[in-house]
Image (cartoon, rainbow, N blue to C red; front, side):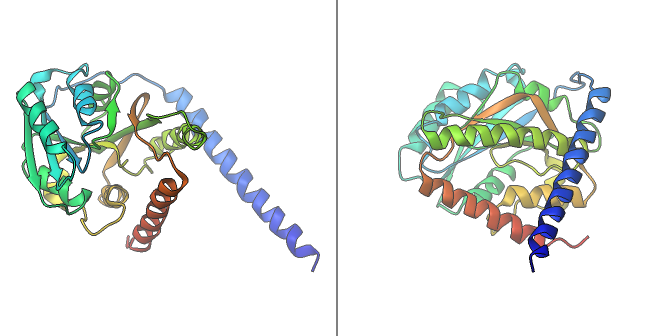
Length: 274
């Protein structure tokens, strides 16, 4: 009986060693293939921002889009007020008056995925960006994301940093997001990257051909990433810029978020039929 724990330790060590060398090999390969991507085409792009009780950060989110290093005449924004109970609609209407490229839609509360689809069906541009109402873009992120759209690419996402970094639980998430960024960088290089919930740019044509977000799915972004992989399209990753997103500031909020993420991931992986 004493040999069982030793065998388990050996197995865990072997698995850990395998993954360590696997990721190290990808990282070394990346260093030889590193090259800067120059933007080939200035696409028209529509941002879809689902907003539920998002008055606190919505204005800053829109500000970050409008002050991107990207031609303003190429940017459109659709804010979908998802039955908010605060003054989100008032903030959105104020922003629509301030900027001439914002359309505000409002509907009863039905969830993020349904709100995204509501806005996506109104978009007409070749590229569409889904952006959380509490996520801010670095000024060069949009330009660098668009530069990665080759013919076989259906989506581009990026690394994230926590907006709030004061409490211990927020600082721990900052470390987690840093480690996750490196992992996603490696996964993006071998075309095994899922879409990200807070900010991803898509080709609108993909939704038209293969369907919109699954409104009954807890992690609709992960399901969409798997669907893109299923149809042999690429998902690229911006490593040298980032978006800043609000993160849970209590253990209860963090637990609920991670429970949803993990349950959604297991559910979607169980549905794979390739």
